[in-house]
Image (cartoon, rainbow, N blue to C red; front, side, top):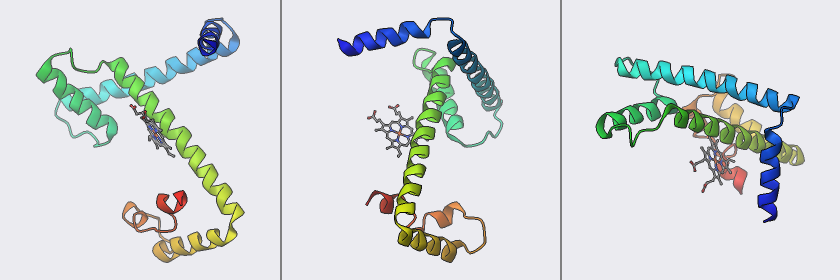
Length: 149
Ligand code: HEM
């Protein structure tokens, strides 16, 4: 009951034409326009059979196009759905990564001996060259498992 009331208040407040709410709407619209352009460009490229980059958005759109060709529009995601997925993925990935990195830095500053071990491992593996994905998978101290212990 209490939560419903709070939710209702927040919802009503978001409709007030305050400066902040206008800015929120503007930014939201800007983000949606950018995402819509990206999605439509990619869809066109896929339909033309061009070799689009093999990232998550590409895989999602490819599967969605296949779905709509095979099963008709009823099973396919709309562009609005894809925009929502992009927003969700971005925010979920951004916030969690930010919090994890901040927490890792706090822990390292509390335990300088682990800083030393982590630095040594990275320098031993990569020296002065730029870290690559293959190398990253060999890190033991600088890894999610060691972070969670
Ligand atoms: C410390 C790292 C992370 C933690 C602890 C975490 C935790 C969670 C949890 C608990 C859920 C809810 C799962 C459920 O509904 O049962 C979730 C969902 C989700 N996470 Fe993460 N997450 C992390 C990192 C990320 C990253 C890096 C991304 C993307 C780049 C991401 C994308 C998502 C998405 C898209 C969902 C919604 C899945 C759905 O459709 O239900 N997460 N995450």
